[in-house]
Image 1 (cartoon, helix red, strand yellow):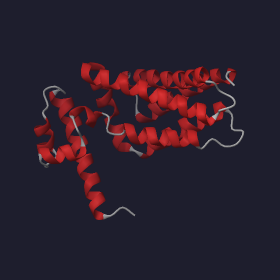
Image 2 (tube, rainbow, N blue to C red):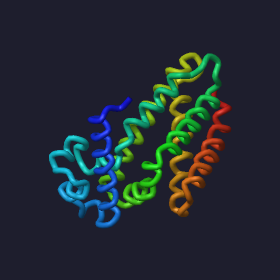
Image 3 (cartoon, rainbow, N blue to C red):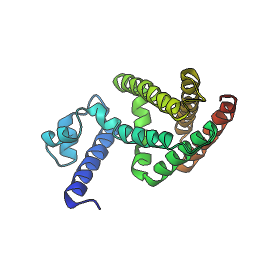
Length: 200
């Protein structure tokens, strides 16, 4: 059970994220200051730095948690579980997390707009994507030590992530609803995973 102190910290963190994304959307990323974000969330600038090291970090607030969840799924491969089945389980789990997290879904369109227009955020996103794919490829290789080599693991991860990310961008650009975006993810993942049946 989460204690009162921890709940207060979670509320403050969420308030900072909401304030930052709202201000970024209204005023622009570069034009918004840390002091303005803190004031909007009714905390001090010093408190902001207790949660985030920079404005960039607010945009990627859930990256570490999503990575850890994903690595846990890959590490939980069941005996004899085929590659395609494990990746399908991973996508289904990710969709369940997203469905249960209206907070992230609510701000996904704002974040996507920022990532497509702010060079500093584009650079950070590319670096994060590259690092993420390397870590996932290694985790997938570890899950199938006798069945996949490094190239096959990297290809599987790159194919799946690339398909899903590009499909989501198209879905967001069309103004699709959250349910339509989830359907897009499922469809893109299914197309990519069918192609992975030739691996292993």
